[in-house]
Length: 206
Image 1 (tube, one colour):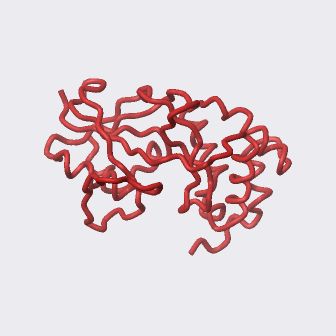
Image 2: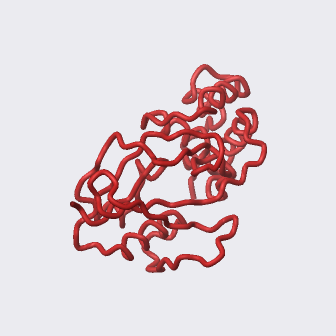
């Protein structure tokens, strides 16, 4: 049995960051999250775009991937790498300490025991913060993020949704969320919506 793994169910699937990527020895594909997730959090680092987080009500268990880490990586080191990646601080050397009282923006690293042949699998839990969780609200946030800096960097809500679809993720709100984006732009595909909202895709990304 492998010692430590990291569960990825959002942007982490395609972009684990150089620290985690350098520690991965194999991927376990077509895993399902043991908890429901939904596009229920506005991400500050994505200009308010909706992102996938665990939810208490609604949502669905979705396709995920486990990054199995080399056996020399300790549980603390894995938690540190995952925490730094979620905080956009890869390479900073900062370490994770479980918070006594998590706040609305606190990244908490949780554990799953003996999950898909891995002794301990880590994942992040960040509180949902979209109170009006409707396809219309999600589309409004995604379109707004695509028009700004996040869109130029392809870190906007529409790009995030495209990646989720590509990775086989599906939530109860997803289909109508996409439809609301296409109606709101308007466009025939999400890729076309991005081209319309970010016509100068080669603009300076700094």
